[in-house]
Image 1 (tube, one colour):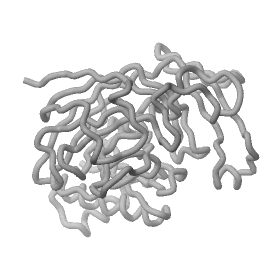
Image 2 (image 1 turned 45 degrees about the vertical axis):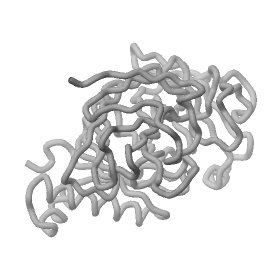
Image 3 (image 1 turned 90 degrees about the horizontal axis):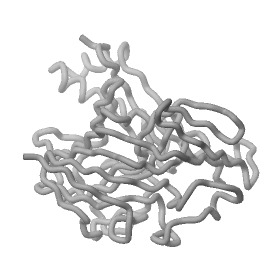
Length: 308
């Protein structure tokens, strides 16, 4: 019988890097669920008021050099390299506030933004699923976690910002509630960490931030899959199948996303690779996932019912 476990941010569960040396704070069996709460990416102790975003108050667990505020690691019994970890997202409930900003970056400089740039403080209404900033602009909410992933197999610590073939800072806005993310297992036990709640984000995450927010409730169900060779992230979402590619350039990331999509179509429809490529050319969309994490991302989308 599957169990449900609970995790809260605290001294034992919060960390700002990936490392296979971090001991798990929880060990679950395949099929078990975890309900947890996350901080925003900046480790904020409360809503943004005024002043530079880098000087906002943070929880005492933050340390210099930390990246995103992550919770975990969660070990899965039996997980080992060669298997696939699935993370089913059951629910995502944002807190009542969030923040977006234009941090110092090469891209923002090219946009013509000088430091300190702009900061938007958002009030989030989960009843109407809308957010409103201090200027009166209103947007719809579509919450997801920016970071879901495992540590690299190499000795750490490793920064949280670049996405990797085994997950991490993917920043894919399709990973909403009802989605299942499939990742190649990178280390024994999987050692999954999650965080970086986004209340809303456009494809690309153009400024470097979404509406960064804490999540008051995140429900995840973890499982293992044998006999499926994956080289990178794949997701089953309410919009359809998604394959994610990563690279130093968008061309490289796009090729990886498409290569993974061709393999997926072959698997789903039991057809040859040339046939899969032709079907993808008429049924699959390519989108820019994000351009702001050093390693850029693209994803290929196969909508539900596009190939029957």
